[in-house]
Image (cartoon, rainbow, N blue to C red; front, side, top):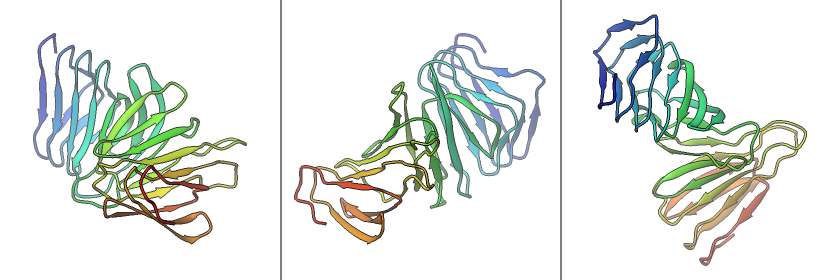
Length: 239
């Protein structure tokens, strides 16, 4: 592609095999794989807001490279739950893995899980403290370089974990949250200090065991485990 807005579509159950990366160039570009489609190769975006969308059972064997600006990777067409793990950051966004994208992804700023499943997993970085903002728009911010990725359609949020000091994750609810989550803090024996922070509404916290329980925000009940601290917001909270 050149400097215009380019679009690449692969039809249902069709395989496109490339020996070089599908290069989109600059502009607002899109790559769409219909149900069962397969791209045997890599795809590279340039400057501009690029979108990579996979239909049900679609796959890409190479790496998805977002490039500059705000680039999105969506599994909304999938019927089965997806599991995305963030592995690092670049100047252009996040790197990570997902089974449908064998080569992983880089330079991604927005992630969308499956629409119909209810157990999609997003796992945070294993080497950086992080802030998960759960609000009208959900986001994950790593607190070393302050890169941010927005996300939707992910139901299970898993904090990072590595090293002798562990990784600290803060799950922060906002007043605009409209869905429930399963929040999983540091799950290993290493030291980590994970926090669930309520919104500025009147929230209800309930303990179900050691480092585990639930919090109800805007009528949405989210469970948590392996969390070491609970913090209320500005509203009248109950514990």
